[in-house]
Image (cartoon, rainbow, N blue to C red):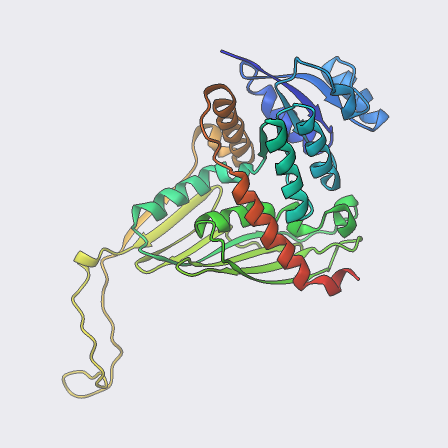
Length: 355
C-alpha cells in the first residue's frame, strides 16, 4: 500500500486539531513529512508533539521531491495565494475552505493547477457526513417524493473575538461555517448554474466587523427551494436537517434522523370536489382522511457515532483512492466555483454591513 507523504501548512485549529488528527488515524495511508507554521510558538509546539522541526515558510518546501500532497491549512485570507504558488511549483494541494475570497481568485488558483498539471482539491468534508449521506440515499429512493424545500441550520449562542470575526480576513460566518451547508444545498439542488440568491446578514456578538448571522435562500428552475441559517444568536437549537417532499418529510441531526412518507398506491383514492364539504346530515366538515404513514429512522453506529471525526476520515479515505487509484474525487472544483459565485453575491447584497 502506498503511503502519501504530506506537508502540513498551519498548526492551528484546523491544521492541528483536524488534519493532523485525521491523518494520524490513517498511518498506513498518510505520513506527515513536513510541518510549516509562521508562528515560533507553534513551531515549538510541533517539535514537542511530533518530534520534528517545523519550517517557518511554506516556500522552504520548494524543490523537494518527497512530498505527494500539501495540506493548506493557513489563514483563510491566504488560502488561494499559497495554493496557487504551491501548484505552480509542482505540488498537489488540498486546501481548507474557504478556498478563495471570490470567484476570480478561485479561477486564478484553478488556472495555476491547469497550467502546472498539479492536482487541486478543496476540503469540504461535510459532504462525507454519515447523516448527509443517509439523507441523499433517502431522497434518491423516492420515498419522500419530489423534494419541495430543505433547510440546513448551524446555530449557536456565543460571542467571538478572534481573527475569524474580521471581514477583511476573509472571515465571518458565511466563510467560516457557511461553506458546509452551502455545499449541501447546492448538491441537493444539482449544482444549478442559474441559481438565484437572496441573503440577509447581521452582526450581533462578533467583536470584529464580520457577520455572525446569515439567512440565505436559493432558488433554481426545477430544483427545491433551499434555506440556510448560520447564526450565533440562537441557543435553543434546531434540527440541522429539514426536508419537505410531495409524499413525505425528514428531520434530524448528525446523531439521528427520522422520516415519514406515504405510498400513492396505499392512499385512499380522492378526486377534486369543489362543492362545500358536508356530512350526510349537511353539517360542514373538513376533508379529513387517514393516510397509511410509514416511518423510518437512522442512527450512526461504529466510528460514525463521532460525526465530526467520521466525515473527515471519509473525506481522507476518498482522497486516498483518488490519489492512488485515480478515482474521481466527490468534490469537484466546478462545484466550488458555483459556491464562490453564490457567496460573492450574498456579500454583494450585504455590502452596507461592512462599510
